[in-house]
Image (cartoon, rainbow, N blue to C red):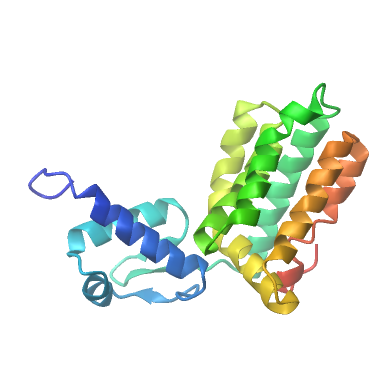
Length: 217
């Protein structure tokens, strides 16, 4: 809400949030970069009200952080932070798999995972690809049908947006194709379709989610 209590134009807020998120996840704005409101307002053709609401949303998503008396910047996770966050994701995924498998009806249960992978294949830009990437991992955990597990995973995936996006970009750069990231997730889906709990756990461990960040799994 503005100072006068009027609701901000949703379209302007969404446009600013979309453009900034794309700049952050594509690497145009890098971790630690200062966000200069004057420049962004001029570049986007909007006032500070919608921009600040967009920055608030991006802060909730774990992409932007506000520094007292210093303004905002793109969030910057340390190597230790990234390893810990991926470690937490792995723990939750493994717990979900051990709770859910073997599935009574793998074909039907895995449809949401297949849909997320199809969205990764069809993605026309970094935002679509990154959203589908996070959805894939959320759907894997969702197989456990455990609401508290889903709630625990959600903030971790938000904080992992930057390293997950960077991982896919680095993989595409080194392999000269964005389809390599898709291929790794196709391998995970194949393991899930086996309905073999031990095979799936091994596939999750071998997923290579830290490889292209210059870290070990």
